[in-house]
Image (tube, rainbow, N blue to C red; front, top):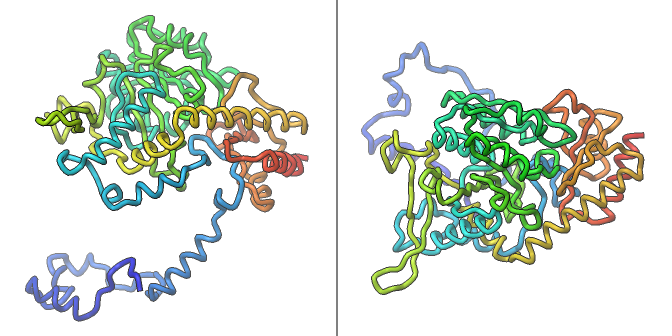
Length: 448
């Protein structure tokens, strides 16, 4: 039998106690006064055999609605995309699966090269000069970008669009508290950043302007216009971007962004109940030494052979704390590898085709909703998400949809009372015409 954990016998316990020179387990805790020790029995089920336990857990897991059995129309930062089968094959190899940080280049060339390729492909997608070897997720990458801008400009004011993902804004505010930064949210008009309001907030104390592209509502922000406002007082321009969308959209780097961040989840990383995922962080050459995390560089050995090494590690565990760029002391090496394998398997044409299908299928779904009598809230250009107004609470509609075999869209009322009864619908390349048509019909029946 394959044991997922090693069972311990009474003989094992006695041998361990004997080895450390104590008579009983209670003796290990003798320094803790009995008055504060828990004396009763824990209110938990009796222990089961491994077989019985696995049966119980499998039964609980089967109650979940998953995107393999149910067509999913929920996005809001985590998407149901095609994952090439080679991704799991590569990341399941033991030399990658158990790897952490490849400090020893002489035995880690495969891992280092994979990270180097990840950095290179992120630079190509974003139009930036340098990318790091990944971060925890898109939210922490965005907050780190804001912190970098404050350090670089010596200003304390961050202007963030209200159309940036609410969870990313929450992470930013948490970071800002510790660093005494002032975070000001810019209002949203017709699903995009209110440019006139942004202008009114700009002054010499602004460290950066932060927008999302496509934004949380799926809309395409006017980056060129916002860039000119962000830079007018020597502030920095930060763009959080879905990397798949950059297969067809103009890269933020070509539109004047100083820092481009985001989450690589659309490439080879399953939804996984919201994580773990993989953040990316790309900058101009000028900011290279301020990048959090670490960089892998290409070099040659004494025989002239190509090799890869950790080139820059501006982390507090490597350099003086006051010189460190970040307290983040880890990254998502395995998920970065998954993204690298997925991007390599898809290739430039494949990524462009995948992004194009997202646009085409989402726009088909929007037309289908309009023809069914639904109100589409915003009328600007969008990528693969759009907002539909319902006549009932989204939570109630999603429960009915689950009964019909669908995972419904995101309830925007969770983040804003003004958006109660508004559903954010995501349509990826995996959704078929039949699934879209049936989803619109079933939601129409709930809506009627």
